[in-house]
Length: 133
Image (cartoon, rainbow, N blue to C red):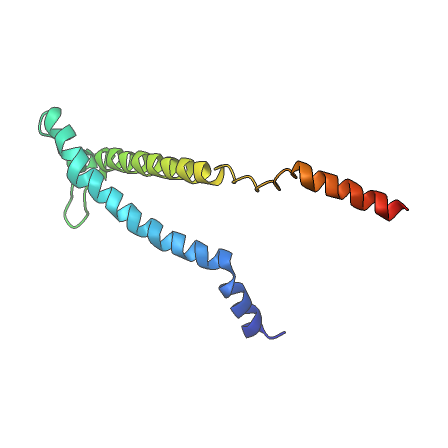
């Protein structure tokens, strides 16, 4: 089997395609959540604690010296990324719960054959008696 044929079979399998779609949608979802956190959630929180922009929160470890940039510990960006993660984790958790609930939906019971009428039971008995003679 040629390598190209093997690769084509691998790439066309449903799992690989599903994974690729998931990664693309996940990347787009990550951008939406990052925007939600940085543009919608964090500004009111910063305003509530005194007009602080979380992106600017940092500890300067070494000041800028000549051509050398300042060395900073940017803990505000870290806090914002933690919020990003928590929101994404909650959204994924909710999505998985909904999917699991849909998977566990009870399957409709197959219809049972209707109970034979008294006339059909009598005819069945007559048939069986004639067959035994």
